Image 1 (spheres, one colour):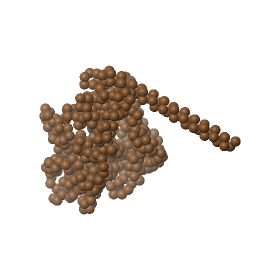
Image 2 (image 1 turned 90 degrees about the vertical axis):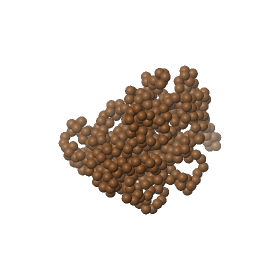
Image 3 (image 1 turned 45 degrees about the vertical axis):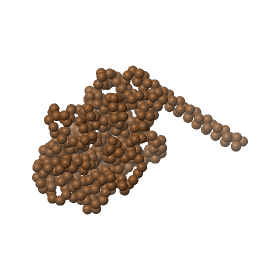
Image 4 (image 1 turned 30 degrees about the vertical axis):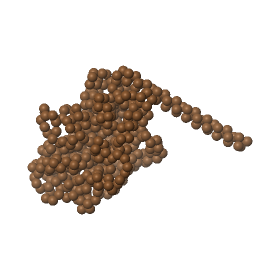
Length: 551
């Protein structure tokens, strides 16, 4: 009887599994049919897209392109590669890679990007919320929508105004001075090092100072929060990995919750200490020019609520949102800026004439004595506004290697007008304003793959002159990057304080000899191609050597 009962139980389990498998298969096939059928109808209607297969969609096209690229390449290079493969396709087109990605409407033209970011700002793509939640806790300015987003953006915006950031320059200078000490040590040891690693620690220290006035000391020692946050980056996922084990890694939900809890507790402690140090007194905060971003946000919040001059406890509503925003600023603020620092050094390394012109500008404006730069800039941060070529170098690095693109969710009532006047539906699509493709379009940028800071200095009418709206590393419209002024300020400060004292050389050839692998390691001849690591970072961490410059 026992044997018969066990057999019956196993049969029931097997039947249940088969029913479940059948249900999943039916759902998959139904979804596949609906997606492919919709694209087939759109193709017949003449909407822009590569040739579409009724079963494979665009998977063959995309797969063929990706097999020729490095395995770790960042996905935001794909639209540009598609356009290189199909030059007659045009800058706005649909792509069907389901089930490895959602149906997409790719925008690689500034006019159409303007329509979804400024004329009518589409909501952020829903999957971005799931991607960011483990890092930020969920209530972050990147993915919030509607009135809630407007309110909290207005509360935190004062801290990111250029006039306020200038008052924090001495704090940034202190952290970059530590960065210079790190470079001196690396120069003495003459070892290959990862610039991405070093720059990441620098930008973490800077963002810790300007947001919370806390010393993370990430450049000189291990920090609990930094370790946990960098580990959390490894577990972030859009859920579209081709490797199913990677996509459904059993440890991912466990590690996400563990890291989320540790980050939340760490920031909560710092926020409480910051609040207690001011006694909750908003009048004191108003009088202090060196307020952090969170100080100003708390002042704005308390004024908005009409609270008294001094509170003994931190408002729980503000605390919850502040913890999310601080985590967002620490993540996004260090991630994209460290990538930009890397690429700026790399481009100056491979373009020595630009480096010489940059040094000449610093000698002319700041004087020949490099040792006085820190005190000069701390005393008069507005000297940074007298360095047009420095700004041009930074902007050109961001043009060639934008750290991110903008993904939005289409809406039933919203259509995009393309260059021919056709109305393109957005409903049901990931609408992708792809800055990488826009920045490398030869119709918008003469010599698009060439590092040419001079294009930012020519007069209107010159063939190199950048047309308005084509430069989109921080996007435009109400959802533009709140920290773009801070990022630009950091990048200029790093160049001013390092370029005359150190010669940083990217050494990919040497690195590849020491670390040989099979497979492609360039994109269109570019060895410093971008990989996904939070934002877009240089491949292999940008291996470098650094040497001291004799004065």
